Length: 131
Image 1 (cartoon, rainbow, N blue to C red):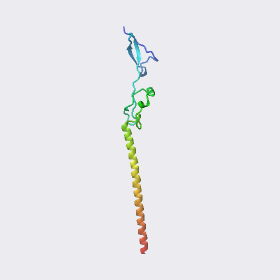
Image 2 (image 1 turned 45 degrees about the vertical axis):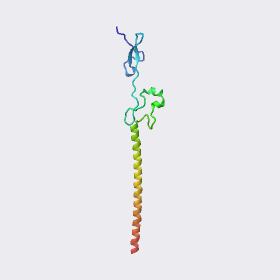
Image 3 (image 1 turned 60 degrees about the vertical axis):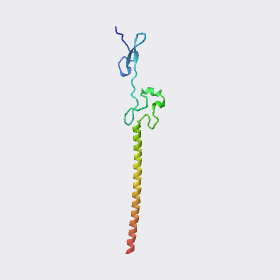
Image 4 (image 1 turned 180 degrees about the horizontal axis):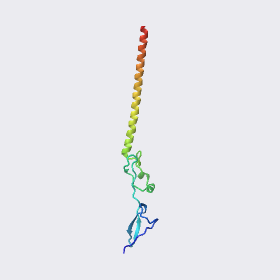
């Protein structure tokens, strides 16, 4: 005859959090072994890819793990992947370059205006002197 199993914990429903595995003990007894949920692991905040170098654990288990295993020693390490960080740095650099170019063009335009205004003033004085 087949041996039956009963849940030894909480409620008697076959839910995701109450999953069991039937295991036979060395004494020949069939017992319920509770299976914990599988961890997805951390994902990048920018692109959503899985982060490399960080253990895939359940949220509660991260507290027991050392900081070195929870993060990566880099800017945004543990929250964004390397390619997203690189992209962010390049974008910031290009924005800064664009701002500097605007300043240079504005300064050049102002110097050109100053030169034109000096020339026009000289021309007006010369015309008055002829009369």
